[in-house]
Length: 479
Image (cartoon, rainbow, N blue to C red; front, side):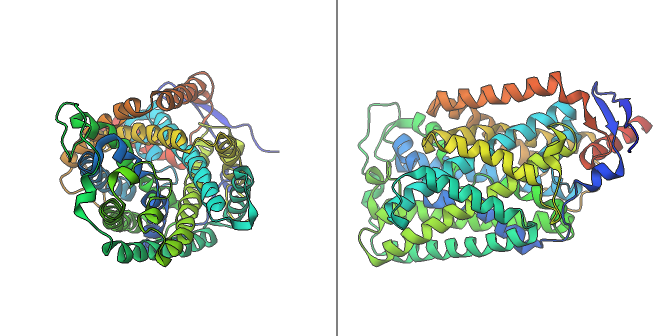
């Protein structure tokens, strides 16, 4: 028999309980599983499928010039955001990632809103990637499969199973798959250089839109419409801090890992964007489902990249599954989501936090609407970016003396730039696909209603994320 948890009322207007040591013992992750190299690999793994497919649809929205400008702006936003998150992760190393940062800065409502937006992104993105994997398997005629749902079921089942063996094993497997995918990009780059023709970059005919030209065939508005597709070059890198509780010396290794990953992705994104468009042509590439392969034609290199491209998709699918499980785990352990979701097994893997979002993602993948699911994931991501950058600015202003082993170059000016672009990106998702953005907004609102009516009355005061916030509250009360 365990004692009834002691109830208390937090001054932010939420009810919290102090759970027993047994409660937290059932909800612990294996620390020391990853150094900065594995964390950098995790960051690249989250994103690398975006180099193989998805970004090219932005050519239809903005042409080469429009997508290029959008990509530079988005790359700047992600670099600024990563530098801000590196600081916050060094100061607040916990499995909640962005939710932990926002909980400290913006209170329970802000923390839950941020965690929910991230969770929506990470639950939906694998569903979109699963549909792309299904398309690859069918196009390669692997195993004679002609119906995609078998593939969706197989990848969810197999990779949830691997994750259940523990973080160290999963991260190492993820690292190997990511390395293979990077080799595929090198093979592509070497083969594409010989096929590059600068005139193909601008082969989309100019429209009569304001500012239209061969570089901006859809005018100035095309730059804005291309923003969500540029995000696909970097989407989910912000998930690296979710590994904080399983990292060695997280205050040092998480910032280093996320910054190194961002540097690699800047190089790979720029390479595939320029070479693929110049090899095939912006017009043909704009609606391709397999852009790197089509850019190489019928060459032997194309066949190699086609098979390795499947590894790229698998890498992102596998790693984002890790991210959604840790975000679910952190929100559940603190009581924001049902508490059973955070129970870990003997290998310290959160069982239901892996399975439940996986079941939801599998159901979404059955729609087969990969492009729409992609836009839904981008909406959730953009909302979380807004809230995380606000968190950095608030923490810098309100807690200037908080220990920060790593400090963001440029301080709030850097994260203010990321905040501005993230706000523009949120609006841009409605411009590209109002239905996808609207559905995601409805799901986000439903989560907030659940929090307002139920979970804010059942928070766990002695969970790590709540303790971070309570410590800050106590220090402010003293001063």
